[in-house]
Each structure stands twice: as structure tokens, then as C-alpha cells.
Length: 114
Image 1 (cartoon, rainbow, N blue to C red):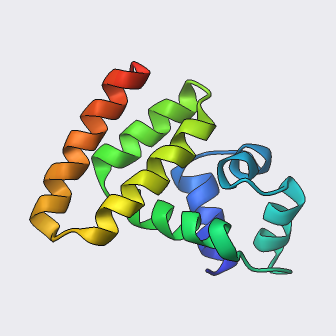
Image 2: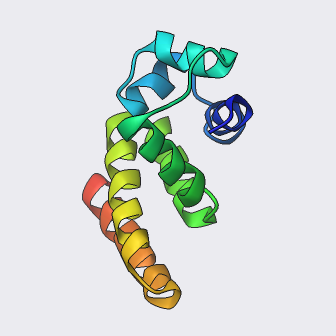
């Protein structure tokens, strides 16, 4: 993933500080800085989560829920949500995936009071 994509996800889409973004991805702030400076590239689970974020945030409902959770200070819940959603999306046909994603959003909102 290119540094411009990482910056776009962090700043333009999620409006997170490097520290908040690092907690979302379970990496150090220094690691995020290195990615954004082009000195290093994401790997492993951080790269997987970034790819899921990029894919998931294209859905307006997902984006809205993620932003609400971040507003309430629940960054760790956002990471859990994105990883679970990514698991769902990778396994299903488009129509079923859309229905299940909507159902998952409803359950997530109800359970975490959003």
C-alpha cells in the first residue's frame, strides 16, 4: 500500500492522529510515521487491516459507523468491527454480503449503543 493511500485513510477519511491510527492498527506511532514518510511499508496483520479499511470504508454505512465509534473514543472496537466485516466480505456473494453487512452494522450499533 502506498504512503498516499495510508495518509488518505488516516487523515482525509478517518481524521485520526498518527497515535490514534497506530492504536487502530496495533502498531507503534513511529511505524505509522515511517509508512507515511515512505521509509517502510505495512506488512502482516497491519497491512491486512489497512486493506480491509480501504475496502470497508467505501460503504457509506460502514464509514458512518466507524466515524461514530471513533468519535466515542472506541478505536479498539473499530479495529474489531473492520476485521470481522472483512471476514464476512471475503466469503460471500455480493447480495448476501450486502445483507449480512447491514445486519452486522445493526447488531454492532445495538450492542455498543451507537
